[in-house]
Image (tube, rainbow, N blue to C red; front, top):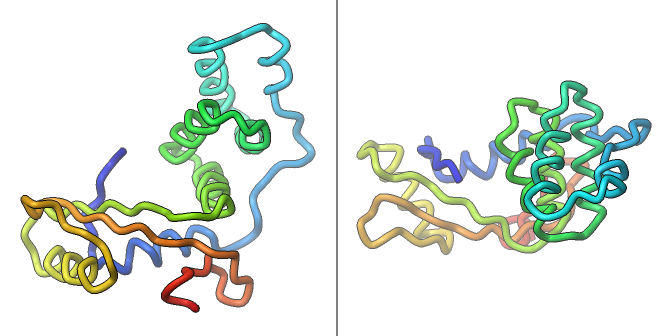
Length: 166
């Protein structure tokens, strides 16, 4: 997983919320190739490769429909692969769909913050993490916070944090 330098600790959370702003993503009219992959008898690594290929399709609607179908399958290893590919995709709609899927699943969202470059921003981010229940590595180079995510707040166009927005 990639680390990002935080401009300010809260900006990580706000940035994720901003990705959620706008029209819901999804492509119900497109039939994902997942059924074809299943019928092909693919399994194991071959199946994961076919999932990745489908998520890298030239057609953006196919990519989103594939992600939706994989998530609906409920198979943890396939979902993990799909989320990995989608979150690192160059397609902003696919990244948005992956984040939306992750947030809709509920529970905690883990945010890791790179604190390796000494600056005012990383000092502020480290302070924010400490004040809000996060942790800092023993060598001070990274921080971690688990954010409990609630339901979508239509009025605020963001996901509700279960502690800060209670």
